[in-house]
Amino acid sequence: MIKVLMLSSSRAGQGAYLESATKLIQDVLSPVEEVLFIPYAGVTLKWDDYLKKVQQALPFLTIQSIHQCPSPKDALLNAKSIMVGGGNTFNLLRQLQDQGLTDVIVQRVNAGVPYVGWSAGANLCGNSIRTTNDMPIIQPLSFDALNLVPFQINPHYSDYQPPGHNGETRAERIKEFCALNPDMPVIGIREGSALYREGQNLSLLGELDGVLFTGENVKTITKSDNLSYLLNV
Image 1 (cartoon, helix red, strand yellow):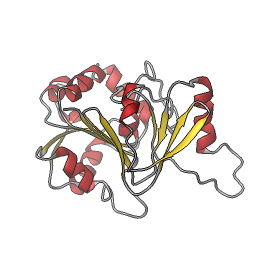
Image 2 (image 1 turned 30 degrees about the vertical axis):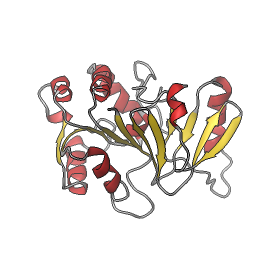
Image 3 (image 1 turned 60 degrees about the vertical axis):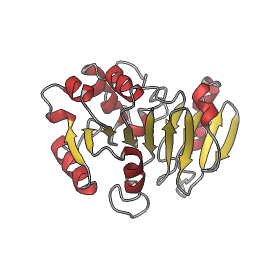
Image 4 (image 1 turned 90 degrees about the vertical axis):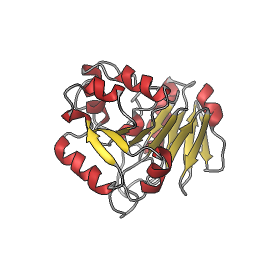
């Protein structure tokens, strides 16, 4: 059964790294304890350091990083679970594309290997990375993502606009996308929240509401809503 946990962020508020996500990660991965970590979204954070950071945050798991494996493809083909960290979504996708790994990840997830991603790692699960918040510091071969869910994701979604800031809000930016792509839904997930796909079921996890944008329509979504119909858009 497909199991995909798409976390908005690695932190909620002033909490410790991955603290807010620990219980969700445990629930999704159980009984699996072996994880293949993909650190490619890290740019200024060295991948060895990124691995240590995640290992320290999740000591109940045995975590190996794909960048230390002689064959990244073979590592994926043998992975018991896949975990993709946050950082820059464009760099993450380009690294995977250059190594021919995107289709392998999809193959493994469709075969029942659990996937956990936060921030950029969550963005990667959607139809494309066109609704990321990140700066395009490197050009991917295409914007096409894993399409583990057939809609767009916007992690770190926020309604906040700093006083005196005259740039577009997050909602306005997403509405621009929807104006050009009226048939493609976008879900904004707030920090501390997550989307979870289990088989053909989709739900919002966490205490904060999310926002669903479709064409000119904007709708608040809650953890009590059944979002499974979005898997068939």
